[in-house]
Length: 211
Image (cartoon, rainbow, N blue to C red; front, side, top):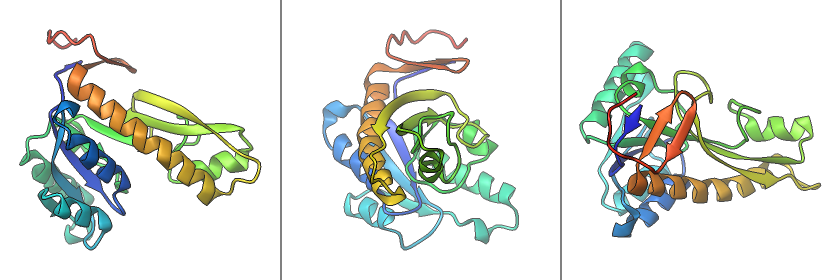
C-alpha cells in the first residue's frame, strides 16, 4: 500500500491529552507539515477536550453508551471523523478499539507502552515489570482489528530501573512516547510513507500506484 503525505490530523483522546498537547505544540510550527483539524473523544469533561478548545480546535464526543450496539457506535464515530477529511487519525490515549468503518477508511496511528509484540493489552507496563524485564519501551504502530497487533512504525527502548514501580516506569515511558509520536507523525507528514505487509517505511515516497 502506498500512502500520500499526511497533512490533516484527527486526534482521538480519552483522558488528559498529553500526547495531543505534544502534537498541538509541534504543529504550531508550519514546517512540521501536519496540523490537527479536530479532536474526538468517547466521553465528556476530559482535559484532552479542554486542551483542544484552548487551541481553537473543533471537538466532538461519541459515547458508546449512546448507541444500542457497538456496531452503531463504530459507524457513528467513523462518520464524525470523516467529516474532517483527515489524512491520518491518531489515537492518543483513546481507550476504545475502533471498528472496521474507521480502520477501512483511514490510516490509524496508535501507541503502546511496551516493545511489541511483547506485553500487548491494557497493562503493558505492569506485565513487563511482573516479567522482570530489564528493558521495555514504547511502540508506535498502525492499528488493525486486533489488540496491539498492527504493523510497527517505530520503537524506542526505555530501561527498567531497580526501584521502578508501575507508575514511575509508565511516566518515564510516556515521556519517550510523546517525543517519538511527534517525531513519527512529522516525518510521515513531510516524507510520506508506505506499507508492504508488516513493513512500514517512512520516506522514499514516489506517489506511485498501490501495491
